[in-house]
Image 1 (cartoon, rainbow, N blue to C red):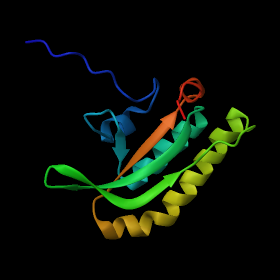
Image 2 (tube, rainbow, N blue to C red; image 1 turned 60 degrees about the vertical axis):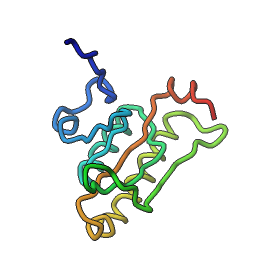
Image 3 (cartoon, helix red, strand yellow; image 1 turned 45 degrees about the vertical axis):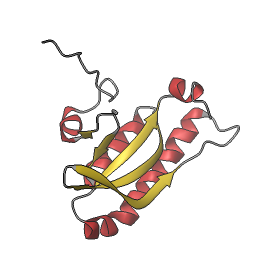
Length: 126
């Protein structure tokens, strides 16, 4: 029986070491352990992807429990894409670095990252 080929939710050129370390949920949401999340956010920012937000999960008994750590970045009305990408990466990185001690206290957590390209952002229904 042939199963459909599942397309990677990660952008072309994404580093293999981060791709292989990612937890990919059945709905194609992607998460990493906190230190790897920092590396992924840096890559997204350098390559023109805006990070719209993060959410922290703790694996528990075969499922993921959402923890009360959420972060999001909104684009201002007239903000140029490159400036938004840089600001989103900077704000997300600052948040992650500030919260690392809290994440460690929670246990072996994963950080889900939501990112978009400029084209994907234009097509968002918000």
